[in-house]
Image (cartoon, rainbow, N blue to C red; front, side):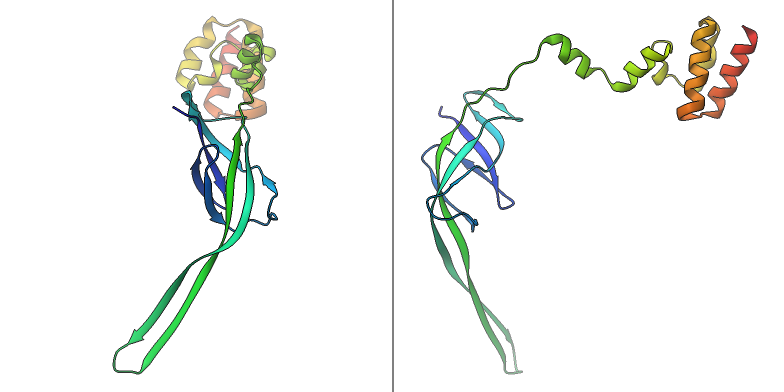
Amino acid sequence: MSSYAIISLGGKQYRVQEGERLLVDRLRADEGATVEPRVLLVGGNGAPDLSPSTTVTARVVGHELGKKIRIGKYRRRTGYKKHAGHRSKLTRIEIESIGTAKRATKPKAEQAEKAAPPKAKAQEAAGLPEGYAAMTIAQLTEAADGWSHEQVEAALEHERSSKARKGALAALQAALEDK
């Protein structure tokens, strides 16, 4: 199976292969110029890639007018007749190449850091208990008894600075008084 790409030109999407010619809405490029449209998908060799770094190169072959379209309006018994028409301005392009530039892979440690949400990193740095962000006020009230004095203070400071959940503030202050 040969490779193909889905590109976006002029707000429309086209499925293209190398060597293919197609008509698209008029482009501002001159005849003979090369254009690099936005690539949405690359497929054909294995699984389709939904976030490609591949480039598609197209050459402008020429500018043309589309088929004439006639429009007629008519209202009976009034003598109203109106005719209009138009020809779309189009550009014929030829797909020269579908590049196969591969994305550089990052080490797994960097990918893991990127996958961790920034809030989780901030919570670890602040000394908040694990899973704190997902806790409801009822869960927080129960779990606060098992936390250290520093963890309760960190959670209380976090609630005061960002979320300000009244129930959480009350539960954490009560837990802090008990310690």
